[in-house]
Image (cartoon, rainbow, N blue to C red; front, top):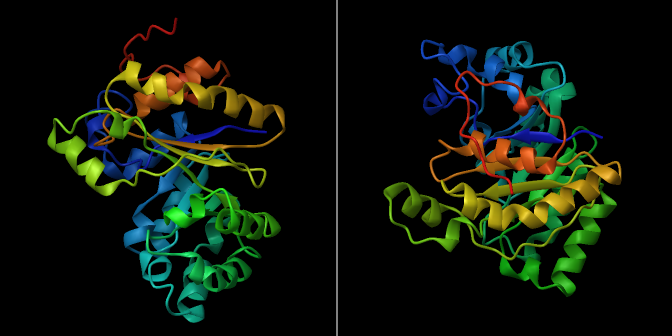
Length: 280
């Protein structure tokens, strides 16, 4: 069992003089990021396909126990009205050199992906799961009904040993949008019911906090017990922490692990000492 911990990106210049030296080149960000985090949300693959050269660099620059969680491209996930086996096959084959370091592929479906599109999802599972572990994120309200549609979805995912992504944005929406960053984050992020679920050995939580440690603590407290439970059961959860502009995401992740009370690379000394947190 391992706790995989990460942020939405590794290349964030706001983390200079915190995690990174001020003169660190962007090409070296991943190598330094993976000293503290053992996973990352690969959001860039949602928007653009990396080159084979970039994939080789990711392989070489990350620690041996590092695991990537890469989003399938939106050209596939958001075009579920058509089946694109050739495009999907090409994309999946591209990442085979990185296969041993892929913790999960992340299929993020849009809010208009409804239960009527479930046959497409079944095709996706049949194509992806023989090659990679997978987590599926749904945003249509019907999949949170605790009844027919949700039961059907969860059963399908469990049958394919596929995880269902948990998205917790309650902290983000608990405050007024007093800054441009908050307003933008609230515009882009979904606000959905939070159903704590583990359908496989690798439950996945995406937690969207704010820049206030006390408010974040209020909303992540229940997850401390749940993550401890998962670890006790022998699972290896993936936890990803966001903040409105992701400037404070590393601090949020570190705060959570401090309260969780386990040993993790994120607790190693940083370039600049993180703020001392009152955990009482």
